[in-house]
Image (cartoon, rainbow, N blue to C red; front, side, top):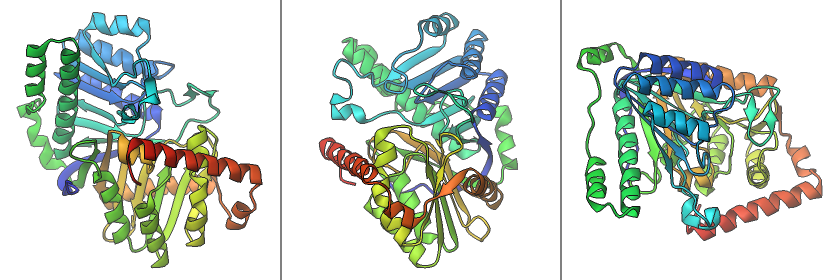
Length: 409
């Protein structure tokens, strides 16, 4: 088990809210790229504003840059035929992580998905967060939205960019290795396997001096099924345990395990104000109903729960003690539920910077005050029995899924 990485000074971190601002930042960075663009995402939808990112990738490849794109086999089973052809003609190299095959998700090992949303430009600039390449005003299952979904990402310079670059390159070469083995191209598979362990130095030497201007302390947290199985959960537990004044967590799919629930309850018992901003609109049966059976213990401990109703909540962020000596904040792809913490590949950036923490805190406080409804304990206990039945059914199904996957939570 690896310990959480030490946060390092010398980072420039910018908070990005919403898909529109995120796409604009991605496109601008891709237009200025000089050598390489590497993008990973769970969903690449190509609808509406998301097509602007696809067009920027296409233009970068046509300029002669090396462009790598990896999508997940559940979030994006395949690219639309038009875009497959356009990417292939332009020279965009794209891969689907863990295609489902004929039996699909009936095989528990295929529940291990690529859920992180990362982009690295020239080894100098990185993006990390919860935002898919998906138009903010559109949902594939629910159609047009009246308000954009609430989500966040960060744009970063500094040492964590190299770490992000390396983990993305390793995954790329491992995907190629698996494909070569399946095609019985064993020499090519061996070459890809060796390349997966190589450091690829893409940083331009004439730009390295810019890092001396960076000031924020930050680090990259990863979760995978090999070396970093518990890194993100352990970072949350450590930060919650060190909290002295306030904890605010916004999480789209929130079903914390025993350790996280106990850590939040203990924080509330020692006088820390704990607020949770959770999904208030029905999106998926399991995620909507599965969390509600844990509300009771949290509310009884004095934890405040707010359900976001303005649109879909997709954020996976937290901020702790933003107005005090040891601020801590995280923005990333990891939900606090079994799929993220036990099965998926995830990535979060952690920032220990007061200005950044206060900015994120201000946005979450506004969402709780103006765009959410607080859950009242008495109302929760009086919810209709059909709702309680559905909640228990979803919770039981989640526990059954964990049993089948061989994990304890």
